[in-house]
Each structure stands twice: as C-alpha cells, then as structure tokens.
Image (tube, rainbow, N blue to C red; front, side):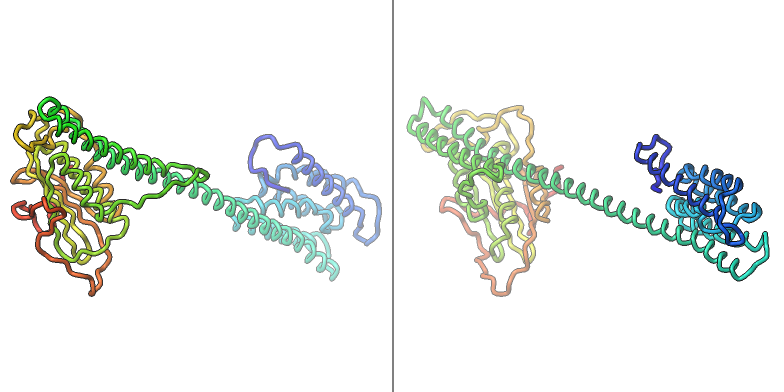
Length: 448
C-alpha cells in the first residue's frame, strides 16, 4: 500500500504487492458475502461477486486518485444492503483499504480527514436507510464506521512517520553538504593565508637580493671589497629566503608526513632584525614608539610585522628614497602601525655611487615598467582578518603613507608604561617622527 507518487512504470515488486492486496480484498469481499442477513452461511451470491469485482477493480488507481477511489468503493458499499447482502467490514474491505491510502497520499491532511469521515458516515448510514434498525444493526453501524476511521488513522500515522524520516534524511544531507562547504571554505582560507605568507616573504627577500645584486654589479670594477661584501650579504639573504620558503611550504605537508621543526611566527620582537636587513641595502629606517607597549595577540603581532615588512619592501622598490619612518602607537584598545617615506616614486636605476662608503639606494632594485603587485591588497586583507583597518595613499607633502589600526585587548592598569619619547632600534637610527605630517593615528586616505 505504498504510494509510488508518480506515473512512471512501477518496479516488478510493486506489481506483485498490488496484486496480493487486490486478491486479499477480493477474498474478504466474498467471505463477507457468505454471511447472510439471517445470520446463516451460504455460498456467495452473484451480487457478492459483482460487489467484489467492481470494488476491487478500483484499488489499483488508489495511489494516483485516492479520493476518487475512496468515493467509488464507498458507493459500492452503499449498494450492499439493497442487494440483500449483509453490510460488514469484510464486504467493504476495499473501502477500508482506500481509506488508508487516502489518508496516506492525499495532498492535505484536512482533505484526507474529511474524506475518511464522510465515507465512514455514509457507510454507517446505509444500514438503517434500506431496512429496519435493530440493536444488532446499531452495533454493526459502529463497527462498519470504525474500520475506515482506524484505517485512516493508521494511514495518517504512516504518513507522518515517512515525513519525519524524510526530514531526518534531508537534515543529514544538508549537514553533510554544510560540512563539505565548511571544509572547502577552510581549505580556501588556508590557501589564501599561505599565499599571503609566500608573497610577503618572497617580495621582501627578493627585493633585498635584487638591491644587493645591483650594488655588486655597479661596484664590481671600482670597489671590489664592497662588491665582495654585497655578494656575501646576497648569499645570506637568499639563504634566509630559502629557509622561510621551506618553513612556509612545510605547512602543505599531509598529516602523515614527518613533522619538521616549527619556527615561531614572526612578530614585532623581530623588528630590529627586519630593519637591519633593509639597512644593509641602503634604506635607513627610524622607529618612533608612543604609548604603553604591551604584548600583542599572535595574529595581531604577525599582522603588524608583515605590514611593516611589506610597506618597507614597497619603499625599497618604488619610493626612490633612502629613508623611511616607522611609528608604533599603543592605545587603550588598538595599536597604530604607520610607515611613511618622502620619496617621489621614481623607478629609475641610479648611476653607480661614488665616494667613500657609498652604496646603492633602494630605487636601484626596481625595474622600469614592472606591473604593480598585490602588496597593498595583501596588507589590507591582513588587517581586515584581525578586525582592523588599513589605509594607504600619497601624502600631500610628498611620499607615501601606510597606516594600519589593529585591535587590542583592554590593557591592565598595571601595564608597564614606556618612555613616550623617541625610541631607536639601532644606534644608527634617528628619530623620524617629527615632520612627517601625520595625525595621532597616522591615517591617510585610501588609495584603492
């Protein structure tokens, strides 16, 4: 009695099941025709055969048209008393079966309940309608009316059970799809994070290597000692680049691969070493600190370091100047990281420096006509990822300004206060905070 729910060909098992149900209903109808009105038993009459054949012939269509099938079997049941047959639940078995199917397959529960109640009432009312009503007839009315109602309740229960199982399967399917989407999202985020790390470290190290190689090329004939020193620094820079690439690409290992030594993520604690690498290629960087310095969350610490690294790399490649200023300002709920320069953005390769102690400026590492990269995009994405903001653009007085505002957890009252005056990272770095034309937060207009 399952609903196939469609007009396509049914499986062979369904046809066997339908045939068995129809044969059982036909046998019950004939068995009901054996019982006579005077409570005696005799062979089924021709009328009993007609009732059984007509009502059972409707059963195969009860899945596609349950209401029509219920109406037809009920109408045949109403004709039982006029044909001098005893109306019992046996002879109206097809009507009971269609009541079950109607409750199971009707479009709405209200329509199914109304149809089953009406069929029960009509079958029960046909008993006194075509004969005298006795106490036996009254009991028979209750039994005849109860069977379709019980079948309808059973069909309704099965329908609810199927709907519940379908909902559970749907939720399981959606949960599986959500897990797949979440896994794909995490993989995409991890790829973006690794790509950003690769971009930052490769851009930084390759820019320094380019500057050192350019210095060595220009001083090869005139200053061999300085050339030798630049080549040594070039070897050291490329070695650091390979180490960082190896550590970053190691993040792509599978879970079963041998784990290597994990190096801590860089942060502002490694800022002196970073600035020293830029100083070796001729970029003098001054650092100015303000406010109460305190430990940063790992994500914010890494973001601040990478923003300074990328901003100074851009100064080295594009600014055409030999100096830059870094400002770190700690506030109650955020830290401001600002990198400024006074360059004009020249992209020419200067002539070989002359004079004692001369070295190539940062502009030497830039190749004319090279398309812009994704440095600003990466910095802005990093700042947004930790809940901060980043702005970048040209300064009215000349040069370029990158300013990032990164969130911090609330500071304790016992946080150690640092000297508000200028703090240098190296003896060779001087205070560059004055005259940079910045506000307290050092923000500039967005240059998107």
